[in-house]
Image (tube, rainbow, N blue to C red; front, top):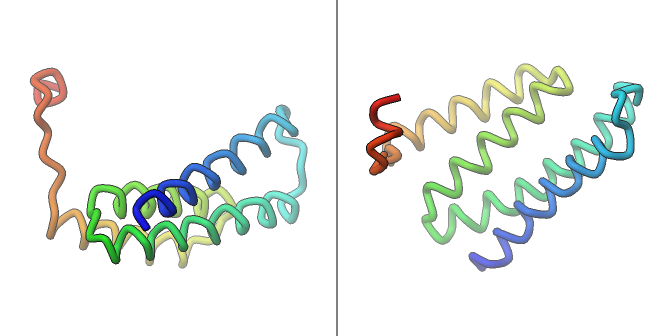
Length: 106
């Protein structure tokens, strides 16, 4: 299940990257962008469910962050805020421990 969820996360990243490559000047209409990002969000939801089941909290946060960014990109503010609130709840319960000395100084 973990590997399947990782694959869904990677697939959603590839979908977003491919949409940027196919339209480098950003001339795609908002509707086309919404369709592509909605497909990516669908895969992210599957990844989220798998990671949540496996209690892979760091990966859950990765998925929620990407979902919030995609919702923001297509001006779905309410959905973005819901996902952001869930990210904050997960981050409060399972904070990311920074072990890198460089990251701690930044």
